[in-house]
Figure 1 (cartoon, rainbow, N blue to C red):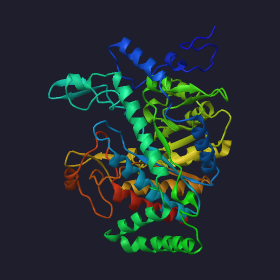
Figure 2 (figure 1 turned 90 degrees about the horizontal axis):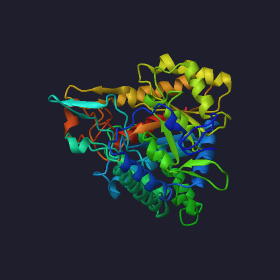
Figure 3 (figure 1 turned 45 degrees about the horizontal axis):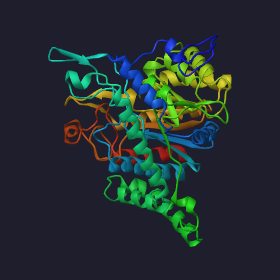
Figure 4 (figure 1 turned 30 degrees about the vertical axis):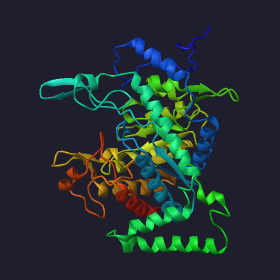
Length: 454
C-alpha cells in the first residue's frame, strides 16, 4: 500500500523527496513544532490556482517557440520588516515600465513574472557564520530565521513559514488589486517612463524610442482605442515565482487538482531550482519532477552537457514547451566558455526549453568599501553575450531574470548615474545580494530593447 511518506517503485509522491539528500535545509530542533506547522500549512487555502498555473505554462510555451519574451524580476530576498504596499507597488510598477519598452522594441508580447510573494529563502555557502570568534547558524531568509547576529534570531523557527505564507497571501492580494484597479493602464505606465527620462543623463539616446511609443499611443487614442473603450489596455497578466528552496513548505502547499489529477505547488505560479540544489539524484529535482507548475533550473558555469541533458529529461520527460526554463547564470567572463555547447546540444537533441539570462549572480564582487556589489556594465555585457551566443546557435533568447527593486537603492555600481564604490553606503538596504535600482533597470530595459529590435 502506498503511503504519503514513502516512494515505491520509483513513483512520485508529494513527500518522495524525503527519501533523497536534501541540501540547504535548516536544522530545526523542535520537530514537533515543525510537524505542527506543516499540518497547518496543508490545511490553508492555496496561494495560486491550477488554472493560473496552466495559463503561465501556455504563455511560456509561446516564449519557447520564439513568439514572446520572458521578463522575470524582483527582490533578492523578501523580508518581513520591509513589507509594505509601497514596496510591492514599486516593484510591480517598474516591471510594467520595462515591459512596455521591451514589448514595443521586440514586437512581441512580454510575459511578466515577479520574484515576489514567496521569495524568502536563500541558499548559503556555509551552514555557520563566524563573527568575532562567535559562530551562529547562517541567515537563510526570513521564512527560516532572522538576520540579527544573536542566538535567538538565528535559530531556525518553523512558525516563520506561517508568517511567510501570510505575507505572500497579502502580497498577492495587493498585486491583484493593482492589476484590476487601473495601475497597469498602458498610457499611465508610459508616462512614468517619460518621467524617468526627464533627468536621465542618457535621455537623448532613449528619447527616440519614447517618442515613437507615445506616437503609437496617441494614434490609438485618435482611433478611439483607450482603456475605457478597450478595458484590456488597463489591465495585464502578472505571475509570481520564487526559488522553491524550503521543501517542507513547498510540500505542504502542494495540492492535487481534482479535475486533472495533477499535483500543483500552490505557493507560486512558477518555481525554480537553484545552482546549489540541482543535483540529478537530489531532493529538489525529485520534488520538482512531479509537480505540474512550469519550473526553472539555474545553469551555472560548471554545468556539463550530459548533466544538463539528464536534468531536462527528468524535469521535462514529455518535451513540452513551457514546462522548463533554463536560467543561465555564468558571469560575463564565463558565459562564452559554457553556454554555446549547452545551447547547441539541446538544439541538436530537439529539447523544448526556454532560455533565460540571469546576469546578476555570476557578477557579484566585493567592493573596496566592503559591500557586496555588481557592476551594471558587467550585467549588460553578460546579457549582450547571451543574445549573441544563442542567436549564433539559432536558439531563441527567451528572457531575462533580474534581482531588482523599484526603490532608489545604491547597491550596484555604474549605470547612467555612475554609482561608485563610495556611493554604496548611501542607501545599501539589501539583506542578501545587491539589486539593481529603479533607474538602472529601466536603463537596462532600453539597452535590451536594442537587442530585441535588431
